[in-house]
Length: 187
Image (tube, rainbow, N blue to C red; front, side):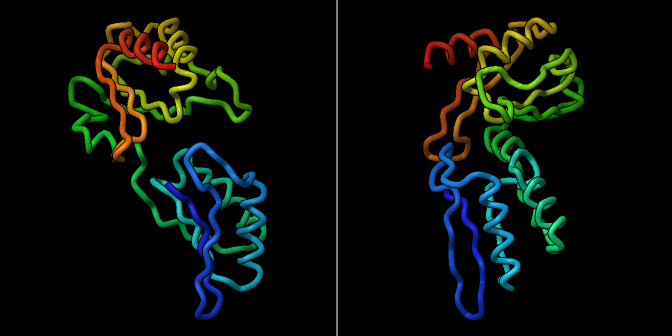
């Protein structure tokens, strides 16, 4: 998916591509902040188009905070976060009476990068909660180890989905231990 910045200056609509391809960032987040600010300060109406919900692991909060600190009015148009959209498309309930009474979203990597995901505590392995990990395939072995150390049974039903709801979607659904084996083998 291409994520773009659109700005309207009079009758002309221009487009600046910020991320030409998933996983490839042509600009730093700071450069994006400055680009948004420069268009807004020039009097343009700026639209930051993102996939999903911009405030769920979409850096929308960072961009909103930055612009508001500069005195720029921001309006967020909510989208459907990937977890909800993909789960619904696949018929996977995130909550289900008697099975999962809550849902928890985790990022699969830290801001600093590397193969070690952010802190995974005992609550992440809660058997009554659905755990959704965004951007977690590359850190899945480390994340899995931490979850099992905190009590997640290796026979817990699970699914790993990459590029959900796209023609390139890949899905493996089985018990947690099998998915760990499958992902480790595929890498």
